[in-house]
Structures are given as C-alpha cells and as structure tokens.
Length: 166
Length: 168
Image 1 (cartoon, each protein chain N blue to C red):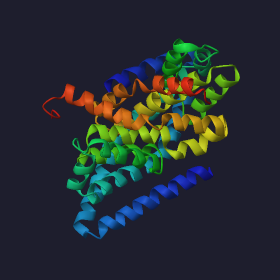
Image 2: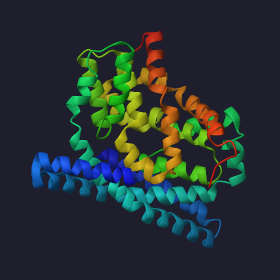
Image 3: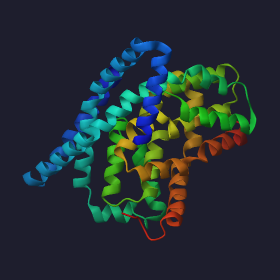
C-alpha cells in the first residue's frame, strides 16, 4: 500500500511540475495540452478496459504450475528456449513472475535459464503488452519492439554461462 | 485489438466451462476493481505524455533521439528509461510522446526496453525481496547492454523494412 502511495505521489507530482512548466508558456498552450492529454485518456480507456478485464481471464486459463514445470531443472539451450517462452506466457504482475523465478531456482533450475526467464518476462510478458504497451503505443512499434527483442533472453543467458554468475 | 478481443472471448468461454458463471463473475469483479484503481494513474500518464510533448523542443529531440542520432541517441534513451519514475502508466505514454516529437524507433526501443529491464522501480520493489541481492544485481548487470543493442538492431531492421521512411 505504501509503495502505491509513493508511486501516486511521484506520478501526480510530476504531472503538477510539468503542468506548471507548460502553464508558464501561456494559458492557451496549457489548456490545449491538458485537453490533448484528456482526449488521449478518453480514447485509451476502452482499450485499457479490454486489456485489464480480458487479461484476468487469459491469466485464469494459464495456471502458474505449467510455467514452473517448463522451468524445471532443465539445462542447456533447450532450457533457455522454454524459459523464454514461459517468461512471455507468465500471467500476472511482477510478484508472480519473480516468485516463479525464485521457485525455479529453488527446484534446481539453472541460473542462466532463470536469467533468460526473468529477461523474457520483462521483455514479453503478454499481460503487460496487452494491457499497457498496445493501447499506448502505435501497433507497428509494439510488434517491431517485440521482434527485435527476441535475441536478448538468449544473449543474457549466454553471458551468464560465460561469466558463471549469478 | 481484434486479436486480443478474440483471445479474451476464448478465455472467458474456457473459464465459464471450467468454473461456471460464478467463476466468470469472480474474475470480472476483481478485474473491474483493478480497472477502477488504475484509471486515475492512466489519466496522470496521459497528461504527463501530453505535457512532455509540449515542453520538449521538437528539433532538439529529433536531433538527439532521431534516426540520425547514432549511438548517442541510444545512449540517451537507455538512462532515460532506467530513471523514469512510476509504472507502465508513465513509461508508455512518455514513450509515445517521444515518438510524436521526433524520436525514432531505435531510441524509443532503447528507452522502453531499458525501462522494463533496468528500471529501478520494479527491481527495488519486487525483484530484490523475492530473488535476493545477488541474483538481482547480476541479472541487471547482464541486462545492461540489451537496451542499446535492441535499439541498434531496431534501427538496422527498420531501414530494411521501411527503406523509404515510415509509411503513413
């Protein structure tokens, strides 16, 4: 709860500071910018609604046990590949993603595979993409971003294997 | 969005067949509560995006984050994404604003990827307590090169896919 309050204070504080900076450029500019932001908000609400309400159902269909199973004590590149897919398919927020990674480490998953999982989760978690990235960003950008991000869970795992950490 | 709509419809049907009407209602209620909770943040994010688009000087942004900004643009986008406060409700509106005022896909990719991978907010709040200091630090160190590399790869692919510039 405290974290949420801190986030809200930072967020609305930034809005206030930037709003003040815009205000100093003139009243007309400030009104226009505020109107544009509000219009963006109104346009985005239906998409966020579909994202939030829908992703809860998608998450309910994918049980976390399946994901943990994929992250079992596999090793090698096949393990990295399944970890990457599992990262993208992991439902829920950061608690779920990081907890699954912690469980995977405990049950003997290799650190490079778990690194690949966490990186893939950060890059491709479907709920974040559906809920936030697709509504806010141009669709072309989202697919583009996801496509060029594909090699990087593997790169992070390879680096982890080379240096032997964590 | 149509694809997502279909995916949602299929999932709702699966939940309904598995858990019946009460299962669907339960998820719907908690999702609606979540939706109500995040709406004010979404509004704040949209206002933030609009204000940033107004304040940032367009020529300067397209010079330092545009298609010809080179490595420097990627090196600016990366720390910007890493220090951005808030959550997805700030990161994506701000990224969209950067695109509007002249940043190219490469620099924006660097920023978004840096926000998801090395942004301190999630790491401090969730990753450290759950996965521990050792794992989290190494995970972040291993992720450090990724935003710049992803942005660079984005630029290389972009000029191949859209040789004549962005289609509108």
